[in-house]
Length: 212
Image (cartoon, rainbow, N blue to C red; front, side):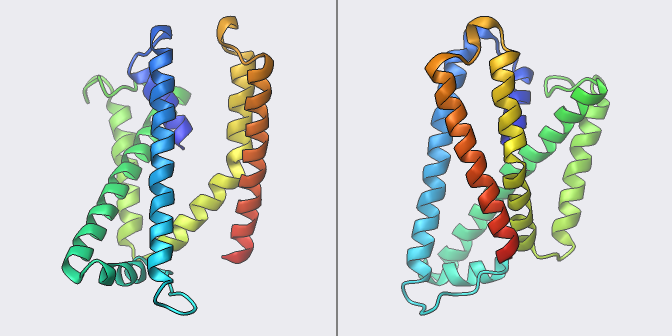
């Protein structure tokens, strides 16, 4: 999803060849920072929850996660921090998913698709954008287990990773202008990382199916 969002965002912002270096640094720094934050949260949460609970704790619902984490931060402060984290993550996810869908549908159907256009200039873009937000809100308010949905989405993402990364690597080697195509040792490195990540993604996806 992030890959499709980024490529559409690059187009929407009107970035060109002159912006390649800056865009690469932006992507690299953002990727490293987000993964470091994720690692820090996982390690901190695991060390906190399992330090005082023999055999671990149940984390099958959002409520259970909140109840397990907040006592270590203080009831009031913990709930405020947990709520802020959930709201922040939800907003980011909602923006990425809805905009990616609106941009993607526009690329397929050909309707105008830019945040620089108003509702009158790009009505279908905003219709799809709002519709996806509405569907997401309906699912959340339906009472369905959000942890199960999250695990399902992550498993699907992992299983689809070879298709996404594979096509991306092929396009970068075949479709880019000649000066910017993958070639030489850099191409070997990119393909090696792609194959390894795809293998790990498929393995984790299959493991998620059998352990869920």
